Every structure is written in structure tokens, then in C-alpha cells.
Length: 445
Image (tube, rainbow, N blue to C red; front, top):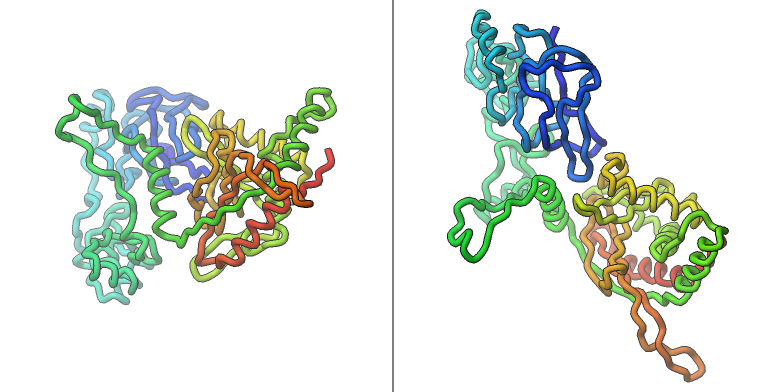
């Protein structure tokens, strides 16, 4: 019996992966443990190893294809075994690859009686869900082409036959802006929502005039396209606003100097950084503002009882945001160690997908101070309600008391928040609390 190799689900929020390279081709002999193909999410790379031995009978996708998770990718078995039934019915890829030897053996087999996907067949089987939907929508299943196994009519076929339902907002937007709806939306039963009308798509880049003369065109890598789509949709589907405030950095600078000396003297086994102290202060501030430590779910909020702190990490693959789970239960030393370990895993590409999913963190810190950036407007990692941008430390004039004025080191803080979840007053009070925690930080190590 042939064995199917599916695209693994790497993390709860991962919906698709990109195949970067096939290590085996059709007709190759495979042993248990052999790497079949390499694939990546928008944050990490993986190798899929074979769990069985045999011969590669079919490959349903090509390199650089984006494949939905849990979808059949390959079939492994004995030469001559049939594999047509395992082909993904909705696969946009070309027909399965075949070696000359396998193709020759396949020609000797009788042609299957199974109907082709997408062909209207009299008496085709109908799934219970599809039958109920057809009765509700008044669709004649005898006129519907089935795309399920062996021509079975499934729910998506009924949706395609009667046209995707559209939400009221989507209908209004289409009428006003002349937008086109996709064949199937992301809502229940394939309903087209307003967000489906605003999905980012890369521009067509082939054959641009002047290429090779004054400029060249470089297509965005698949990973960059996925990140771009996420950022675009974040800005399109939330009410983002940024407040900025300076924090007195004298205390954290003194603590950093003390920690650096303790590390050099061997009294600390981790080198606590300015960013570590800032993250520690943020955790303390979030404990006082649970509304900020939350996810916006549209018409509801997910309020966290713990702080799962995300911290942006710059890697060769792009920006990653791993989450420190239950950061509110950690002291400064343990928090520093976990932040460093997660950053290293991100750079090595070994980070767990569950820790870099957008829903893994309840709040995120993005620090560009090391690059000399004073202020910036970070983009929300939806569904998170807020994200804090941390800038570099710059001397600014300040009242030192008693009629004395001087220069004080100030750290730029930029809080971007979703105005659907929290108002400006609450956001400002939280940002002030963060600044106060940084300016008055007391830490033992």
C-alpha cells in the first residue's frame, strides 16, 4: 500500500509552507530517515524525513510552490502501484512528475474508472455537508462538478456553484470601490469578508521597460512576500496609532554598568543588556494594565493573565518575534537568558514555530536603539493590541531640581496600539507607566 507524505503543520498559526528544494525525485529509492524535501514557513526552515522505505511514485508540487499544511506532497511505495487517488484535488501545481521508468509502468496499467476532478458526473457521491448546503442554497447537485476524491461533491463545490456569500460590509465596499471578490472567502462556509478584498498581491514584474539599462528588477523571495502580506494586512485591518514619550535612562545605564562588571568578574553567568532591563520594566508595567496585555478579536478581547513577551530579532531571513512564555514569573537574570536563547534559535533557524506565531505573544517589544534610531512607528503583530518600539539613548535638557538644568540621557519609546481595543488615554497612561518603570527600575542580581 503506497504511503503519502503530507506537508507538516509547523505551529498552530501556520497555514501553508513553501517547498524550497526536493531532495528526492520520482523513481528514487528512499530509506527511513532520508530527507525528502526542504520547506520553510515565513520564519523558519525544516527538512522532511521519510518515515518509510520504498520508491518515490509521485510528487504533486514543484520547488518554490506554496503548499497548504496537511496537503499530500509525495507518494512512496512499490514501483507500479497506483497513486492517482492521492493527488490533491485542489493542487495548483502541474501534473505529478514521473521518471521514464515509472511512466512506462503506469502505461501498462488499466485506466482508472474514477472521474476527473472538476467534471460533472451523473450520480456523483455528495458529502453530507455539501448536501445540506445545497438544500439550503437551492443548488442542484446534479449540475455540480465534484472536486473531492473520485469526483465526490464536497462543500466547496456547492459554494463555487452558487457563488461565494458576501458580508454586508464586503458588498458595500465592492459597490463603492469596484473591488472584485475572490472565488472563496475566509469566512464560514467560504463567505467573502471585507478583509478578503484587501489582500496584498505582489506587482507584475516581468518585461519592465529599461531593465538591464538603468535598473534591474528583482522579484521578492517567497518569504519576503509572506512577510509583506502580513504587514500590509496588519495596517489594513486595524486602527493603528503611535504615541511617543522619552524615558529617563540614568537608572538603566547604571544597572547596565553594574551588570557588565558583575559578568566580567564572573558573578553573573549572563551579560544583562539594556534591552533586557527594558523588557523587565515592560513586564512590570503590563501587570498594571491588563487591557494592553491582550489580543483584539474584533468584537471581543482576549485578556491575558500572564505576560507572554515577544521580542523582535533581526535575522538573515528577516524579522522574527519569538515569545518568552510567562515572562512575568521570571527574574531579570532568567529573562535575560531566555531572550538570548530565543534570539540565537531564531538566527540558527531552529526556533519552534509555536513561539514565533503572532498569537504566541501577548505584547511585543521592538528595540532599534542599537542602530541609532531615536523614534519609529512599529507595526502591530495582529491580533496583539500593542507593540512598544524602543529607540536609542540621547542626551536632552532637563530640570534637575533646585533651579539647576542639565542634560539627561533619555530613551525614545514609541507605542503603537490598536484603537479598536484601547483608547488614547489608556495607551498614554500605559506608556507613562513604562517610562516610570524604566526611570525608577530597582533590580537585584
